[in-house]
Length: 233
Image (cartoon, rainbow, N blue to C red; front, side):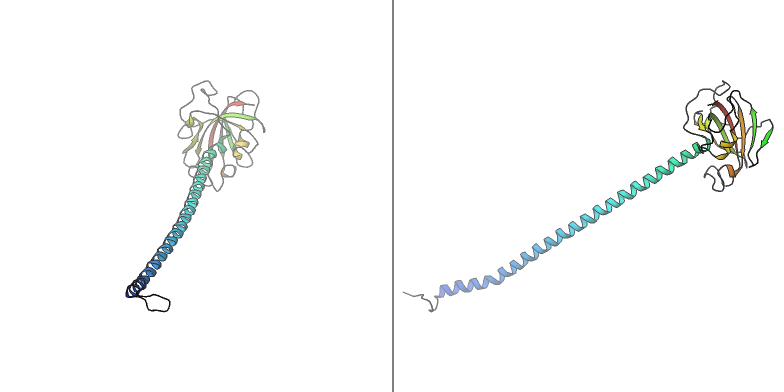
C-alpha cells in the first residue's frame, strides 16, 4: 500500500491534481482582476452619470429662471407701453355710450386736427389753449376729478397718436394736480366745465420732453389735444 504520510512524496494522482490547481490559479486571478476592473468601470459610469444628471438639472434650472425673467420683463414692458397712454390722458376708463352733447360717440378720433375757432390763451410756460366750446357748471380746479374724451396729434405733421374714441369711446377720469397725467394736462384743464371742449397745444417741456414716448411720440414733440369734458367733480 502506498503511504502518504507527511514528508513523503505524493502519489502521481495527487501531483497531477496539485498541478491542475496551480494551472488554474493564474486564470482565476485574471478573472478576478477583470471583475474588479468591471466593478470599477461600473462605479465610474455611475459617478459620471450622477455628475451629468446634476449638471443637466442645474442647466435646466438656470434656463427656466432666465425664461421666467425674460417673460417678466416682457410683461412689464407691455404693461408700461399700455400705461403710457393712461399717463398722458388719465386713469382707468369707464364706458360711455354718448358724447357730452348727447350725440353718438364717434367710432374713431379724427386723423388730423380739425380746424377750430376761438381766442388762444398763452400761459407763461408756453402752454396754449383754445376753448372751442365752453361748458357749464363748476369749473375744474386743482384736485378736481374730470372725466373726458380726447384725441391727440403731433403738431409737427398732424398725425394722430392716440384717441379715447379709438378704444371703444371709453372716457378717462383724472384728478388734476396729482401728477397722474403730463403737466400740460394738469395745467391746461384747469377752468374747464362739463360739456365744454378745449384744445391744448402743449410744448415738449410740459409733455414728454427730450425722451418722447417711442414709438408714437418723438423727442421734443409739441402735442395737440382736443379734450371734451364729460363731468367735473
